[in-house]
Image (cartoon, rainbow, N blue to C red; front, side):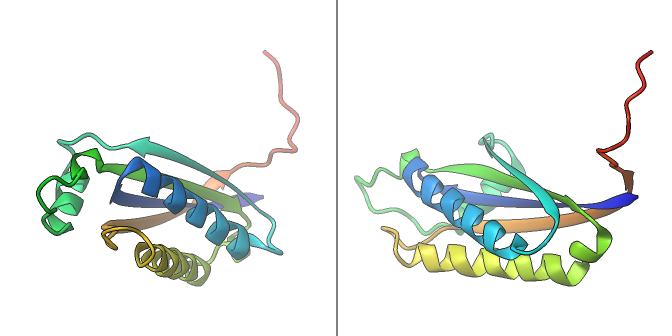
Length: 141
């Protein structure tokens, strides 16, 4: 049976310490969102190069840091999520709700962090034209 694949890409401009808390928050939101759903999900986090347009866009949204601040430790990171399941488990409405929850919880986290600002961008896409029947027998050539 065809499965739906939903990819979510979050970009954040943070220190490594704040990144850990952001990743924990993302993990909690995804776990809560997928409760009682038959959906497979995975996440990975990657640093974004300083010459990447996503980095420049987020860095420009961060207020100027006071002199002597260690803001040079901030960087842009991508937190990529992929969710795979039946189309009725990953509808556009479900994914929009997940995006809202992620943005709300990360905004809430920002209020508890020093500097209280976590520039973030989010992008989601869905595909349904892939057959990922993992129970299918593999033929060996």
